[in-house]
Amino acid sequence: MTSKATHIQAGYIALNDAAPLIIARECGFAEAEGIDLHLHKETSWATLRDKLAIGLFDVAHLLAPISVAASCKLFPLPLDIVVPMALGLGGNMVTMARSIWDGHAPASGPVSFDAGAAGARLKAMIEDRRARGNPKLRLGAVHPYSAHNYELRYWLAGCGIDPDQDTDIVFLPPSTMPDALRSGALDAFCVGEPWNSAAILDGDGVLLTTKGHIWQNSPDKVLGVRRSFALDQQEAHYALLRALYKAAEWIESPANKEELCRILSAPGYIGLSETRLKPGFNGAIETGLADPERLNMPDFYLPLSRAALFPKESHALWFYSQMVRWGHVELSDDHIARVRASCHPEMLRAALAPLDIALPDTQQDILSAQDIQSPIASDQGLGSLGPDVFFDRIPFDPDALAAYVAGQRVGKN
Image (tube, rainbow, N blue to C red; front, side, top):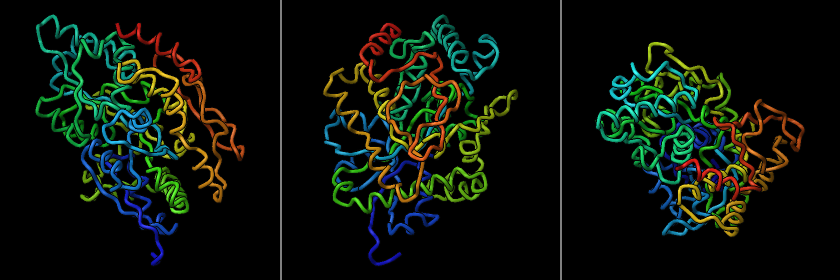
């Protein structure tokens, strides 16, 4: 590290998809770019968000919908950020308490992790509990403005379950989810890895379905950057983006999985055993069941491939559509314009230009339109996208947002 290295303060939550920031520091990618990257582990997304808002952090590992909410000015503290980069695709799942599963499994059909079949099983459980006079299932998500909350709601509603009438959804920090499941405070949760694997391997949880089964190759976290930092220290900002790209490339290599889990298992980072970290990286997902014992999903979490780092307007606008659907914000042209403007792929293009990286030519597309992995139109003519299909196969056109929201409102009733 030279005396001229730029100090960058970065906040993160103990989750597998914080790995690009951690590896950028631990494997020297940040240092090679002249960055002295200081990492600060936070417990809750609200605390991380507020420290970013008041300038204690320059950048942060951030829930993608928080950046959308910030652009709509939904927080008491103004959060003036830009999003130049996403932090991967996939990476979370839905886990149920074993006690709840065992109480209903005999009557609720064969096991399937297909989102439609798993939702039908869950609906049968809910109806069985209602008939017995049992309380509603209490489901955990990590923040009101999270991919977890919106994907959970989308899945439930698509399976004929009203999230607000048939369940209680509560919000807890990710690392507390396994304890909440074990104590009976939660009946199920939707959270990123490694907290599902932790609950399942401890014998407290059973896999219901995954984020990839609900929406294939879907976004989850982004890099939130204070606008003042991005504009005033552009050189350092771009250097950090290059370091994170190189870290994501390192993470995705199968040869580095063992070393990756060893680094993240340190108490200062995620602090769980390598056994609990591995499923979320190698895609051999533990189910908590005898048959099948594991679910093989090589694309469960993608830190780099399929343009995983590219910040797409269509992704941000889908989260906005769900905010409108569930009454979190009004639909307006002003909001749509602000959400579109929150994504800054031009910053990623400028930062990665020296690396000659293939990036999509467009940042907006119709989601749920690709059944298979497809070549992308890119600056360099390389790379691929998708598949990006929702489990109900309903397409989302960002240019027809009002009609999409109106159609989905029927599904809530």
